[in-house]
Structures are given as C-alpha cells and as structure tokens.
Amino acid sequence: MWFFRSPLIVFGEDALSELEQIQGQKAFLVTDAMLQSLGLVNRVEERLRAAGLECEVFSQVEADPTLETVQRCAVAMSAYAPDWVIALGGGSVMDTAKSAWFLYERPDLPLDSINPVEDFGLRAKARLVLIPTTAGSGSETSFGAVIKDPQTRQKLELGSYEFLPDLAIVDPSLSAGMPPQLTADTGVDALSHALEGLNSTWSNDFSDALAIHAVRLIIEYLPRAVKNGAADLVAREHMANAANMGGLVINNANIALAHAFGHSAGAIFHLPHGRVTALFLPYVIEYLNCGGLGRYQQVAAVLGLPAQDEDQAARNLAQFVRAFLEQLGLPTTLAQAGVSRQQFEQEFSVLCANAQMDTGMVMSRRIPSLEEIERLYECAYHGRQVDF
Ligand SMILES: [Zn+2]
Image (cartoon, rainbow, N blue to C red; front, side, top):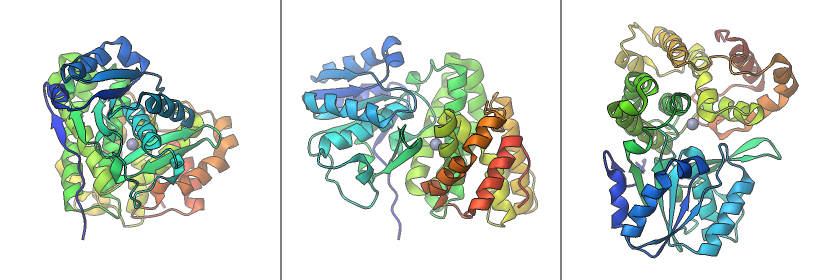
C-alpha cells in the first residue's frame, strides 16, 4: 500500500492572482533581499492587500540558509503572529519558511525533532503558501527542507508531510528574469530529483511517470531557458513545471546517492546545491549500473539513446548527462567545480563520513560502503569513470 502526496498546485500564466482568494488577516512574507529589489515582493504584497490581508516582510534569507537565519525568521514571525506564512523565492527561502513556520507553530520543539512519521499538528496558527522564483528545488511540492548547521558543517535534512503547503503557486513569470548561471544551477537540481527518484527503493509507477516526463522537459527546455532568458516564456513555463514534478518525485519516491554526495560536498566546499549534486549524477549512474541495480533503460529510450540492454542504457545516459552539464557550462568534476586538491585531501575523511550519514544513502537501490564512498569521491574529483 502506498500514498500519492501532493499539495494543491496552481500553475501557468497569472497563477499569482490566486493569492487574492486567500481569506485571513495577516500574512508573513519570507523572501530575500534580491527579490525585494527586483520588485517581485511588491507584486505579491499587492495581491495580498487586494485579498484584505496585512503584510510583514522578512527578506534576510541568504543562499544556503543557516539555523541562525531560521531562528531569526521564527522570532520575527512569532512577534507578528500571522495566520498565513508566504514564501517567495528559491529553495533556500522556501526551506527557511517551512522551518521557521515549524518553530512558530511548535515553539516547544527543536528543529531537529522534525521527522516524516510524527504528527506535529502544524496549522494551528497559520497556513502555508509556497511561491517559487527559481525552477529547480521543487521545495514548493516536497516534504523536505534543508538547512545548514555551520557548526557541524552538515546539512540538516528536515522532512515532514505537514510541510506540504496549503497552496503552491507556480507562475513562470516569476522565474523569467533569473540570470543564466542561476537558471542552470537550479535547473539541473530538478534533473537530479527526477533521475534519483527513478533509482530510489521507493520508486513507483506514479513517481516514475513524473520523473521521466520531468527529464524529458528539462533536456528540451533548460538549455533554451539558459540561452534565451526572459525572452522565452515557453521554456520558463516548462522548466517551472518540471521542477514542480521533481518536487513531487521527492515526495513520492525520494532522492538518493547524488544528493548524499552533493549535500556533503556542498556544505564543506560552499558550492551551490544544484550544481554540486548534478555533478555526481554520471558517477552514481555508473555505480548503480556496475552493481546491476540501475533503472535507466526507460529514461534512456525517452531521450533517444539507443541501447539493447540496461547496461548500455546506463553507460549512454551517464555520457549524455556529462555532455548536458558541459553544454550548460557546469562542472562534471569536483576539480572543475573549484575544489583544490589540497582542500579535497584535507576534508576527505569528513566529506566521506558526512555523505555516509546522509539520508539520501538510505533510499538508494545500491548503498556504497565507506571504502566505495571514498573511491566514488576520488572518481568525481578527477572525472574518472566508475567501474566498480
Ligand atoms: Zn536537490
């Protein structure tokens, strides 16, 4: 027996106008300084005011948000006592909003008590709306939130199905102005969610359908979105939807090895989540394939990669993903990502230990030993093919 979990999603042109249907008194808007300066926050505030809500803005979320930011946001939120929490931004903003909202709802509990099995009775004080301005993290439809703990240099992975928003608003006009690098970095995160979901032990017919179509959309539209920017709203819309589907894949199948490797490396070497996670995809595909446990034939067929069997499909797909990342100007090795050999060696044992502890390990169809984790990192550092 299984469940399919999804929030209510409003998508497409002018989806933002749905905010005017909200009923309540006070909205607390979580966002970042850049979005405020671009005028996107104003667009949301106008809609909320049209719905008769007062509004307060917290715009101090940074990329890769820390526990301290979440705490500060929660203090401001609690002081304002809203009945709606609205997040406008990328994964960092949405994850901060989810986490701060948890602390507002449950001040009696620490953040690391969040887990997917317990019922926390959220929504006693406020409901949640998530509005992505990037196309990648899929946080708007997923049960997860990732927050950095600078003290341990680890990513805290928080998951609760109560984190699914009351409403996800996916309006492609909000991501249209993203610069090319951010478009590429975030877009390949959605690719990781889709490919990881296919190879999670929780994958199922529903998540497979979403994952395979998301991959198809990303391969077709991400290069266009990077190249054409705001001029190509068709590409922006398909990417916004693909990212959203990627979030649903996380929800209903979960992420796996590339995220375990990416979370650890991203926290230690300060690399953007999407960029560093996608970097590991080819190595993970090869590793699963060497163990005879990959499920790549269907997706390879959809991408038009000829293959007679699973082994060939996985090899072709790994090469295809490498070329795709290169086409987008993204690194395919840790060295290319800017990690020096000295840094790599210095942090190697922590890097591997943290990856082994990551929840992404648990759901993988093949789980590497510590020795294999070390070898995988070495391969990803130099760009060597995985043959074990
Ligand atoms: Zn991700």
